[in-house]
Image 1 (cartoon, rainbow, N blue to C red):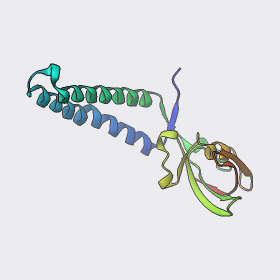
Image 2: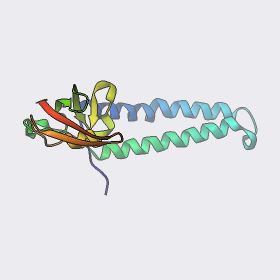
Image 3: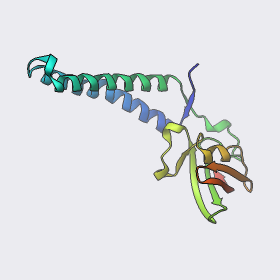
Image 4: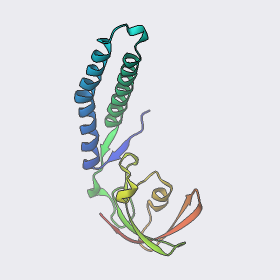
Length: 157
């Protein structure tokens, strides 16, 4: 059975745009590379042709994976989510108890995670630990460096 993934509208739009680009411009670019390589002569000894065919295979694999991902994607409706508990799409201000610093994270689907934008996956150790917590509660995350405790300071949408 396929794994369902939950996305924001922004995340779904990004996936659709990427798939559309690969299906159109990506395929055109690969076809052009194959044609150019084919024009260079004997295909049995043409490394450019082999590389272009390999790139075509990789492109088609990526398209198939994106199609599967979109087929199993669900838009998150945060109107039915309890705002007093941490859940997907929650913006959570936490205090790292070990280093006594505050951080703000947005919990998103795994494919939308981007630490530079403070978007962490609900599948990450910190995301898993925060899920279901309320303001004031302590979340215990198992990280590669050991256990990290976070106190939930604020939850918003």
